[in-house]
Image 1 (tube, rainbow, N blue to C red):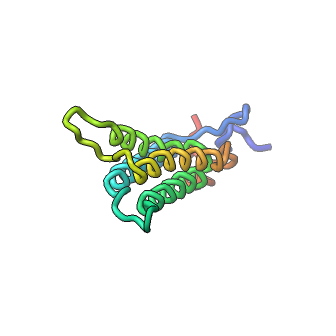
Image 2 (tube, rainbow, N blue to C red; image 1 turned 90 degrees about the vertical axis):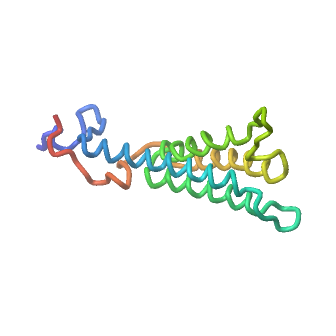
Image 3 (tube, helix red, strand yellow; image 1 turned 180 degrees about the vertical axis):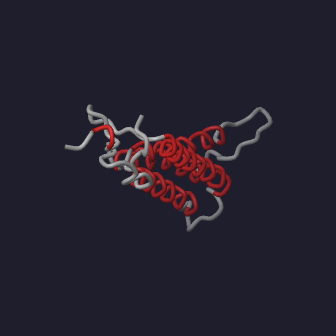
Length: 152
């Protein structure tokens, strides 16, 4: 009979990780957050860059990219929190970019491209969150199969 303390899973069924695994998971979530920040900065400044007729093609491309990144993050981390990490970074940048300052500075203007980018981005975030796995059944892809050496 195997000792439950050696398997990395406590008797209550909760997975326990070592410090290294926890640090690696935290670093992965931090990088996903930073990816969302970078997407928000670059997308905010380029969302109105090109159009195909009346369609703001760059804004649509950014919405699709945001959906793909958030869904991919959620699936790779095997939890909704992966999608939330990338989405939080994008929201942290994009929402202030849509505010008009007293000097008149505005990054995301109120036009078709701005509305597609902001509202389409929010719909993409919600859709990616809903499509991401609900619970980490076997841990993230990053930590899959890794057990703590000293489970104390």
